[in-house]
Picture 1 (cartoon, rainbow, N blue to C red):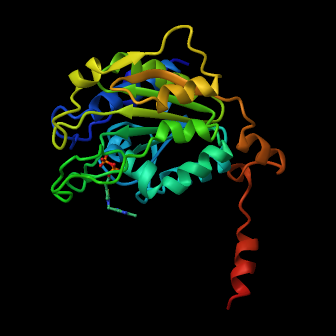
Picture 2 (picture 1 turned 90 degrees about the horizontal axis):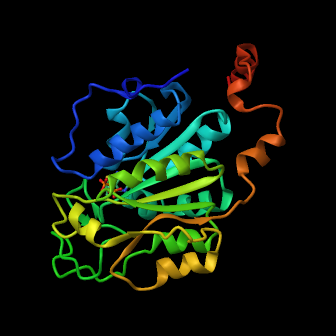
Length: 285
Ligand SMILES: Cc1ncc(C[n+]2csc(CCOP(=O)(O)OP(=O)(O)O)c2C)c(N)n1
């Protein structure tokens, strides 16, 4: 069976600003899924609220659109109930690391087989450009009018320090590298984080696609992603340059494999017995 780009095509009008980095991510996501020969009915994209979470609206694919910061929790539930599906989350850095920070930490720890794609545009874009967990110190926004005073989160260092089983970084300034990175993350067994440095032409005049091209380097061929100390050095050493590629791999046990071993079959394959449900309801009468 061959999967064609048209299988993922949608006619829904796109509401992102012209020049938004989300276009590169949308195109790369569709291309990655097509090249992996994954038909849309085998894929679920979970999102919350924001500009990034609109992504699956512009594709023909199964989607669960829930609360801001709760997209990872929904995805874990879906994967455990239907472990034969490919489960992917698209979130802004606000949803993933701010409102959803707690879920992010525990998803790393659990290592459920799913991919979290974070569109890091450094702002709460949908709600008009307030500072997010990754806005650089000193940035002036309409709310933080004297400049941001809280240092930004380092999500890559956080993920590597907690032995996240796949940590990769891309940028919308280098869309050519996004498809192979997304494909590797989706194919990886376990929780994979793809952090994408995304330009936002509306709120951010600094981090343009050209800025990211000028300030990023592909990891060298001899880079060993299994070397945790080297990976931490990459992301903790203060630098004007961003490493691109697979930063860290850790072949840890996968939660859904372990959890599903303990039960007969996943929830989706269980039959429904309406009489049992009616009997249960009757006890509340
Ligand atoms: C729990 C909760 N907190 C805050 C909001 C308001 N809110 C909705 S979208 C959003 C910003 C989204 O920013 P981000 O997740 O970075 O995505 P982007 O729009 O930048 O793609 C905020 C603050 C909300 N809906 N729910």
